[in-house]
Amino acid sequence: MRKIVIWGSGGHAREINWLCEELEVQVAGFLDERPETKGQVVDGVPVLGTLADIELLKHEVELLCAGVGDPALKKRFAYNTIRSGFRISAPLIHPHVRLSRRNVIGAGSMIFEGAVISDNIKIGNHVIINRNVSISHDAVIGDYVTISPGVNLAGNVTLDDGAYIGIGASVREKRHIGCWSVIGGGAFVKDDIPEFTMAAGVPAVVKKRLDIP
Image (cartoon, rainbow, N blue to C red; front, side):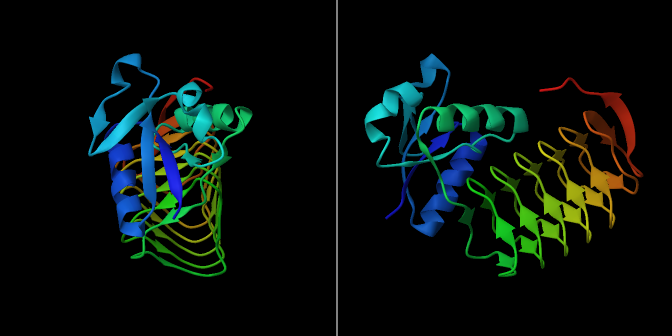
């Protein structure tokens, strides 16, 4: 049986724990950088501390770095995990996901129930694809991307590294969303969105520039 440790101990990490229960994957614990959380038990799973506290488990567990939705935080967790010599988890895919065998899914990524992942789609590392997401043919999803519940991506959409797509947003075909950009919930993206920006509305327009993570 696979044994994993999840970075984070909040709501999304708890949902991953539930996903692991569905997949019969053992969760050995959560990691959390906040000292006050160490030793707590969340949904029956202990908070173990940080990487330094699980050094003895290095060769026994896989680390899941996408236990938080913030793309920049996922990237930092992944960097520290790899630098410390821990193994990254293989993808977690709920059994009630429809996806083509011609898709490519990167390490540490997860796909929750109800998602439909069409054909010839490339999904990077540490990507969150949440419930009831629809992704059409030939989409390219970069590393550290978070796709919230109910998002619809049409064919040939590209999401660069670190993009965050808010709940219920839609992106029309052949559109490109730049790295580390944020699309607000319920938005309809009909034009390309530049990197390091926040866009929202119907149709979505750029509201502000974002700091480089």
